[in-house]
Structure formats: C-alpha cells, structure tokens
Length: 208
Image (tube, rainbow, N blue to C red):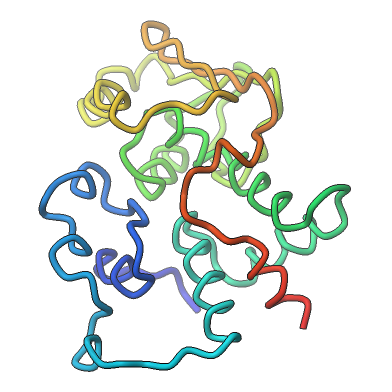
C-alpha cells in the first residue's frame, strides 16, 4: 500500500484520538476531532461492537499513523524490538522515537512529523556535521542535529521554533535555539512518550 495522501484529520477521527498530524491546527478549535469526535463516514455515529482483535488492530494502526510508518517497515521495527533486551513494546516505541524525522519534530524544527520528514528529505539538516536526508536514521545519544546555514531563513522553521513552547521538548533532547541545533542527551524512557499508546496491545497482535 502506498503512503496515505488523503485528509489526515479523518485519521484522527478514525482512531478516536488526537494524533497531532496537522501541526498547529491540532491545538486550535478547528481540530476535527474536537468538532466531531466520532469516526468518519455515514456509519460513524452508529454503535459498533469491537472484538479484542479489532482493539489490537486499531492500536497498531494508531501508532503507525502517529509516526507515519508503512506496515512492512513497522513490522520490521517490531521484529527488531523483539530481539532487543527489555520490554518489547517499549523497545518498539523507543526505536520510533529515535527516528531522525521524529527527533526533528520533537526539537521543534517542524510542526508535524510529516513536515519534519519533508525537511529531512530536502537535506536541510546535518547530523554530527554531515548532511543527512534519510528520515529513518536512528539517532544515538551524544549526536548533534543542526539546521544548515542556508536553511535558517526558512519562515516555517523559524515559526515552528517559536511555537515549540506549546508542545514542549522531552528531557532526552536539548535544543539550542540560537545555534539552531539539538543534541540527544540520552535514550528516551517510557515516561517521555506522552501520547495515549497501549503498546502491549501491539505486542499481543503480532504475537498471534
């Protein structure tokens, strides 16, 4: 399946949660799920009995949509997390959090992960002084992400940095706004991921 290119507000309504896919719009009264908190479509307001499998599937789809990952790639992350030491569900979330596009978003250089992925693809950042354009790169503790000199006048990036206070920066990252760079201080922990995610349901789904 190709990457979804339709109206992203429908995805939030389908999952019944704010996924913050639309940037600053998600923090305003224009947010679709605040106006219509039921699934899209003509049967959206009907009563639907959801099975255990359905609950697990929806949780997996929700996390995929939050991070903008296709199914095959998401399954690969799960298999990697399953081979790692520790709790599989938490390992999965840590791998997703350490993606370069997510780090760009978390540091406030973009208002959404989709926008962050585009900025990375267009080569606006360096990692440890080297130009990068692969959104899935796993950032490691101690590595420095910096906005390239020629990209510092981009209005959208500057506006996003000014608005990052609303979203907050997690403790495992450090932002130097004046130098337009961020550092990964440590590995993320479960408490840093504040989205309403029940990762155990995903583990149960893939363990069948």
